[in-house]
Length: 194
Image (cartoon, rainbow, N blue to C red; front, side):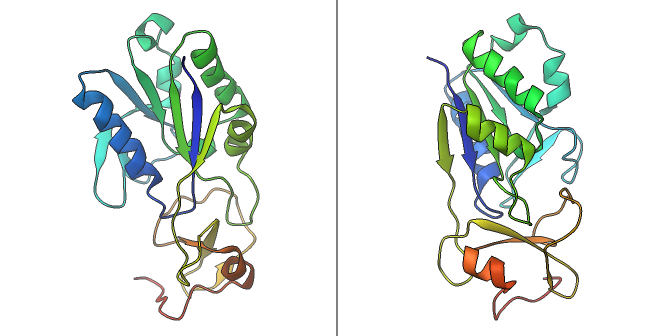
């Protein structure tokens, strides 16, 4: 039975690496799998899903997937969506349709909340609609579980205001535990720009 999965985690928790490993596992077994992401995510190049540890695979943008026929989509054993926090409610409901009406398993990977501690719209919808929800864990500099995403400026100051979406990785964001996110504490060894 097909299900909708939402696998979320803080920055640096290897969500994309997990998505690419799942993609590899399907393909290694001779099955077709569709890898997709929202067009908004362009930081790693055109039509590429790239993880921090260097794994990468070509993908289609979510809007391109929406242009495919259901018969074409049904040839896939699974659809994997990276950066799912950027999906809209309508796009999440489309994934629900693919699972419930077309019988295609869908695995979504993304952030739960933004740097302000507020849910992303796509994450909110996935938390409501997903059949299975799983946290991909990572740790804060103090050793506790990191559950928050801190955005910081060039001087290493933690930001709590601004646009919800500013694309970046290690140069702008870090995963922290709630205590250190609340305090804006990036740790004693943090060096801006490294």
